[in-house]
Length: 163
Figure 1 (cartoon, one colour):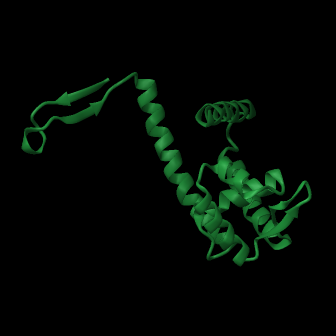
Figure 2 (figure 1 turned 180 degrees about the vertical axis):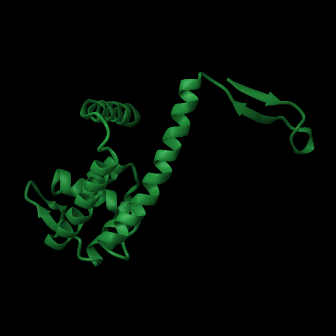
Figure 3 (figure 1 turned 30 degrees about the vertical axis):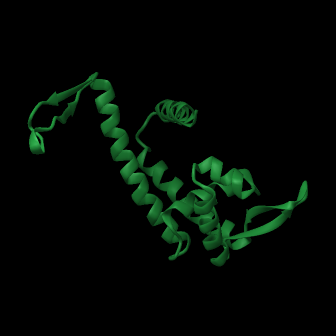
């Protein structure tokens, strides 16, 4: 529910007031906001650890290629939710840095598959492993069942957000 403070805006227009709702959803919104801001900052830091010239957004492409193997650019774009032009620019930068290479798709000679180079894989894994060690350290006091439950709930949230 949104409250409106009538007449308080410039020129006497209505200006939306604070959003209200169940406290658990407001708390969730607040905590997700903090988590997402930290994730963006960490993504930039991790990207720079892979390569000083790597954009933060491109780190996720490396993660996807490491997890899923060779992929077409269109599949990567759909997975991360960006357009063809953005994907093309990011992949070109990854290729220029020597982190990603193209190879012909054996199932369709007109198409190209992208894959991590050996250097890209080594750099990505070093940064990823350091990140995992930090997570393990920060969650060391947690009960393993709580960690598993958090992972399950985040997976559920991500599935809902994608659909």
